[in-house]
Picture 1 (cartoon, rainbow, N blue to C red):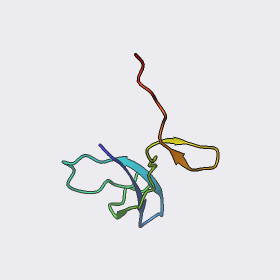
Picture 2 (tube, rainbow, N blue to C red; picture 1 turned 180 degrees about the vertical axis):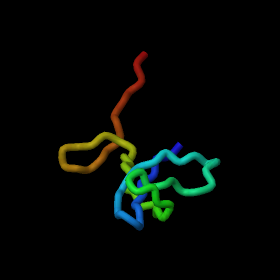
Picture 3 (cartoon, rainbow, N blue to C red; picture 1 turned 45 degrees about the vertical axis):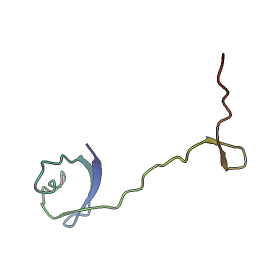
Length: 67
């Protein structure tokens, strides 16, 4: 269940809301209760495969099977 960021077009209040797939309407602003809210573009954190190195790059882990 994703958490989205919204901004109210009436009072400019920014807030987060858990949105279910079954929700038909966007949430109301918790500050002024306006229904005129807009979903904001949110940044997300993605980590590439590998382990960070000191130079800022990534390299694959060097694991060897034990046995």
